[in-house]
Image (tube, rainbow, N blue to C red; front, side):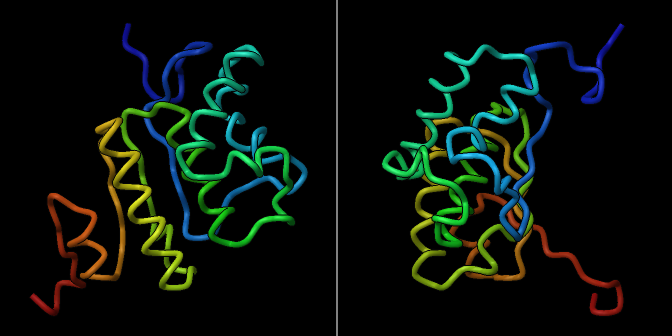
Length: 152
């Protein structure tokens, strides 16, 4: 019997993780608990999930904020938390829907570089949606352009 993404057993790797345009952090959780959320949902023990969460918190440059709450973070920092959580879950596929669209240009460039650095280490399959041709060129090894059918 095969298992799909909805029937994964306890502790098994998720098929995918999603990073949205707007940060998806829980306001009542610390950075560390936000990053570890998916691991906890999969039944991973506290020591292991915090070890993994701390690793990805460091990778996105937020180790000094691991005990902070989202209201204490900038928009870019919240988006880093979302990215760390997605990678910490060790998905087969990472889905990203314009995760940097709401950020200022400088923060966007920094996060693009961080995303590429983290991706280099993991080589995850990433499906990245963007309206920016420049962003697609910087981040992608393959670009697909979608139209409404009338423009083709």
